[in-house]
Image 1 (cartoon, rainbow, N blue to C red):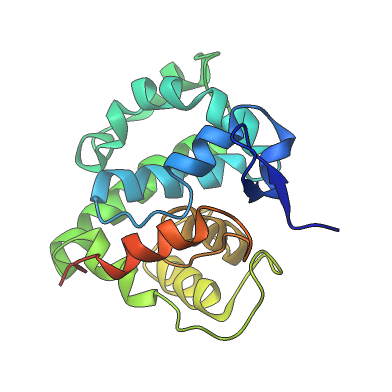
Image 2 (cartoon, one colour; image 1 turned 180 degrees about the vertical axis):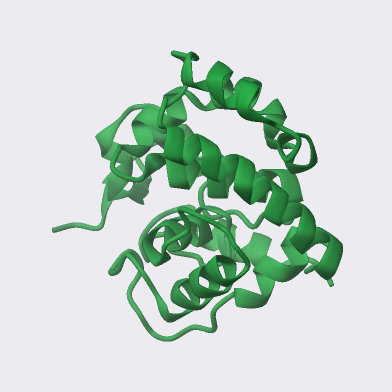
Length: 201
């Protein structure tokens, strides 16, 4: 099977874009481009945990609702959420109303505060797990040694809903790994962005 499909401009994009029209913009503007902003990194970890058992299309369609419900994913604000907020969120039809995942976001916000205080930033910690090229073909797996290591470390620090598959999807999306298909027109653009990145310390 071909690893790509033609985009609106006729140039090849990763095959998964064909699953929904809105995926092409997400693929071209966001997926795989490196991110070092703590809020965006925290948001993506949260959204990937909400996606567990669901489709990314569902989560992407509700992303603005999630942002409104969770204070823009500012983890220092979310860390102050209490049971009243859980009740409010469980009544919010604009998001995925799953108590365990909602409570995990609040827990993880508190753990993110601890991590940022200890390490300087979430980005400084997370980017330490950027993998070296191990020769795996793009999009050939759902976990990796790096995602397993990061998942293990986050769980050791008290994070929830951050299994290796969830973490690998996060690493793909946030540019810690360039998993665009070899023939995808965006692969080289992402690689240039990664090469120009100043990693946080």
